[in-house]
Image (cartoon, one colour):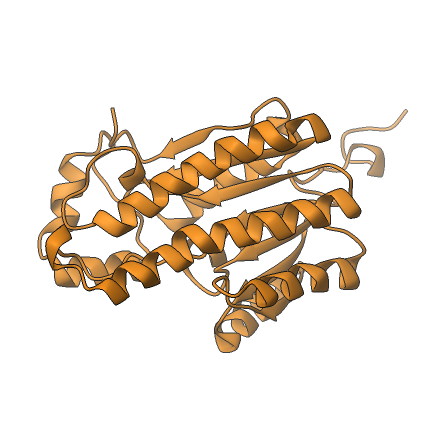
Length: 263
């Protein structure tokens, strides 16, 4: 009779045997997700525009005993996104799950003062980039694994009006809509699509924001039930669960991971 320490009872990771693609994986929530997914048993492929960041994160995962590689990609370019997704399938035989994390916020400003180039840049990454990635990922999942799951990174700013973050807030709200549409369209084919809506999270993007908006971190914390800013790893945990088979009956959801900010 085997016991709990035998191979038959070895712990199984949340994402064991999954091949996962993560965009915006060079830092912040994306890098935290890459490390966590690997710890949970996934084969992880990191994607972003900055090879030095990708290399550093992938090397760290491998040194910790995980399986990771990377591909340089620009989510605003359809050909680049398609090549990245194709590369995952070529290297690993299939794509099971994907986390579309790449995003920017742009300098905070009232709506009428936002430069057109800022609007275009934010929407091209945060909205169009998610659409391009989802489209390529759905095709790859259907052609290889057959079924799977996708999580898009939205924002708490998509759930309410956020002064001085107009284009960012609107683009993230569009992500919620894309998520719901894809869930309905591809649920019958066994592909679940969800989103997370993080609250204030200590990423490089947030640190840049608070240098431009002094006092914002304290203001956000006061509005948060848990009275603090999240670590990127806390957002990654929610994403890992949504991508896992343990969330098998969850689709079309935009899950607030915000410490109670939107209550």
